[in-house]
Length: 124
Image (cartoon, rainbow, N blue to C red; front, side, top):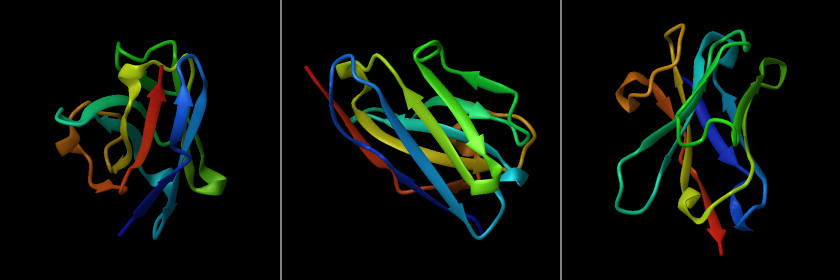
């Protein structure tokens, strides 16, 4: 059973950068494809990015490609999401997720484990 815990959220200004982190316990993240999702108030959970178990292959949603970067450090059992040029529309709770598949999926139902989320608020 893998437990995921996000951190690094907060209140930032438009145009700022922020990195959120996801620490895993109870299992090695090297065995899983990891992803980041977000959910804004009143909206469905939205896929942002995924990275496969070995690290070099990442996929992104069109809405964040070029601004957000997903990375992982298997030695630290952690995954990160670097977010640049933040906009008010990026305000949401950001979730880390893990799945046993060899590639990422944009579907929340494809993921086996979820963290509790970390709030990111972008103020204008």
